[in-house]
Image (cartoon, rainbow, N blue to C red; front, top):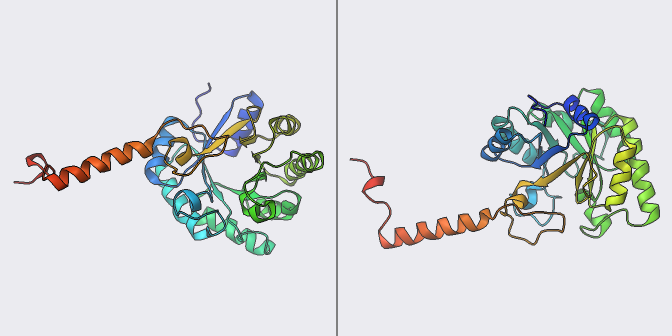
Amino acid sequence: MVVRNKITIKEFQKMKDEGEKITMISAYTFPIARILDEVGIDSILVGDSLGMTVLGYENTLEVTVEDIIRHSQAVSRGSKRSLIIGDMPFLSFGVSIKETTINAGRLVKEGRCEAVKLEGGRERIEDVKAIKAIGIPVLGHIGLTPTYINMFGGFKVQGKEEAAAKRLIEDAKMLEEAGIFGVVLESIPWKLAKEISENLSIPTIGIGAGEFCDGQVLVVDDLIGLTPILKPKFVKKYSNVQEVIRKSVQEYNKEVKEGVFPSEDQRYD
């Protein structure tokens, strides 16, 4: 594996060209960002998934630009190497081109993001061009796009039918031509993700899209076992932090009740 310094969109493209897999994790806090940076994760996505993992919402639709800005500020303080990408939440785009570019600019100027992620296919072409025109790199996102959850009727695999698959292939190509530097493929059949990855010159980042994408992204809370709800098939839980926290707090609670904590070791003379 090549040891890379600060990751930029140019490094993303180089990794694609050289066949090196790209690692991305959705995260939202300073301490987690520090760990990800130290480990060598290539990119941190400050995703609108924070609405569900951090704020306890049922979906991502209530997340605001201010939410993303606050958390991306925290992430940027903890990360010096990873490429920081800010998610554009529901209603921060699609209202007008002017509003879209202003919101993208806020994520960079106030949130200290280095790129933004924008959900949608051909309907987002003009948005991509406008954001890129003011100097902000754009990561695309097609397949299961959470801001469209009410159109999809829930969190469902996309592109299973021939017509839907064809449309996603076309969308990916149109977004590439509009100037995105990469595209997230979420919850689509692996054969479709493989075809899209092979037919784009830019990197694809999979989440529930199989192993043939150029990189992968997972939400850190899912990865470490902190999310209490049932996880989709594509999530692999690498640890059970929820249980570690539970046991630690149970022990603290017991020791305080029994007068064991604090002891002489935790007091000042």
